[in-house]
Amino acid sequence: MPRIRAATVVEHREMQRRALLDAARDLVAEGGVTALTFPALARATGLARSSVYEYFKSRADVIEALVAHEFPAWIGEVRAAMAAESTAERQLAAYVRRQLGLVSEPGHRALLALSGQELDGDARDRIRAAHGWLLDLGIGVLRALGHPEPRLAAALVQGMVDAAAKRISLGADPAEVTETAVSMVLFGGLGSARRHTQAMNAQAGQTRPQPGGSTRRRVTSAS
Image (cartoon, rainbow, N blue to C red; front, top):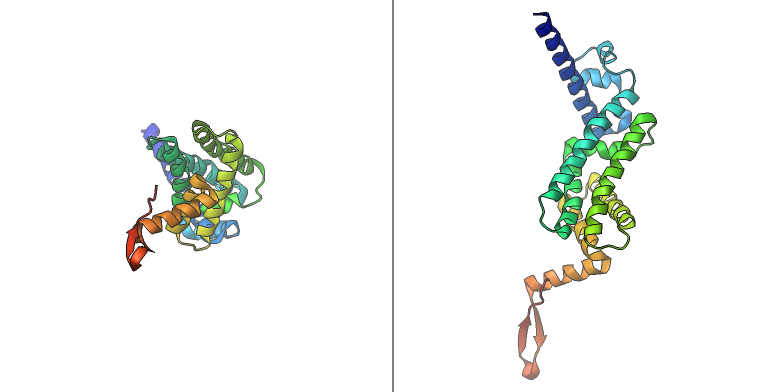
């Protein structure tokens, strides 16, 4: 019986801790790191403020725990999306799409807010490590594509993803931003514009004046 009672206490504490981290994630997603306060955590979970201190000693402790839990899950999502694709080019597109898809989900916006903060201690180190793991995914696929500078290219691709994520967080249309980012990563700036023009021409067609005043419809391939 004592073992059962002890296990119940441990499970209860773990559930409370999980509830606090869920509340912390929502607070950061909605109001940034400054919204993460112990009174706010207490209100969100229905705990007394003194009870919150039984799980975390400071806001820095909460942030560290949040980073430790959320970033590996984020990277796992991106890795799984890439693994589901059959070619390196599709994997690179998935690398971009899945990250921006996660940014578009309210539950994951906290990571974007945390990444933009100047954090101290273990939280900062964990974020740096997580970004390194994420970059490794990009390096691997760019190496498979034969890029001569996969590490540099991966850093630039991730920079574009981060910029696109910020646009989404500011209210831009997620689908439009995502597909523009994917097109830019796969085809480059000029290539992206040309591909867009070709796609529009393929859908709408074009008319050209012909000898004798006649016209014919010309459809441009999108490939």
